[in-house]
Length: 307
Image (cartoon, rainbow, N blue to C red; front, side, top):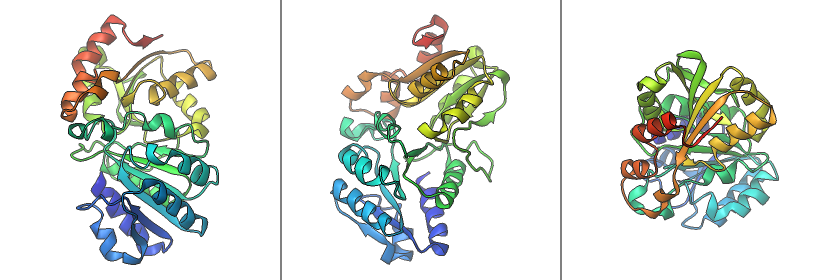
């Protein structure tokens, strides 16, 4: 996903002189193509995320579309006030690009985990969230962002994501992207790099008839569209590499309640125990309960399920 992001950004910058990339002294081995081709529009702000976001807001206020790139927790929680006051409330064209959502940087400890970032970003009233699942969805999300600049959050996986989409994908805010057609009344809904987990769940007897859908683009502005999507189902299983509270799972439950939708929903996110560990992503996902065995067992037992 990271490589597709920088490739798409370079292509867009060739025809759009207002595109700028700002990094917080990381991203090297990824961002060099942009830095080398557009040195006047590449800025390393150093390890100073609050200043980085203020710089991005200042550039955006002068008509630039600024892409800010860092590991997922750093350009979100470290500069939440600048995002809220400077970027979101002023509706500036700043795209916050983060890599390593969830516990992708598990071995670096909980300072590098991004398991509450969606909870923060989705409360920003003008912020649109992009959670692509593979390189094709990244390309589509980037095409949308370049065409529709606004306060936005692009959450990328770290590396090695399986490609499940055909080329030519383009997101519609609030709409699901059906990757596997199953029973028209049941769906597994997921975000980001969890496509492998979603497809592995889909091979289990309990979920073999479920359609598998990613949600690449969504925001508080897209509730009505998403509600219309959910109306198609009488049962959904929602999974996210984020705490279940206040992330995608909560958003589905809120939309279900607000629009009086009648379907069974089961919600699975990372458990709180995952933050107390320093281990590989795979180990932390398992300890946090986000694995096929745990989800299937709990689903059959009716645990962590809201009817």
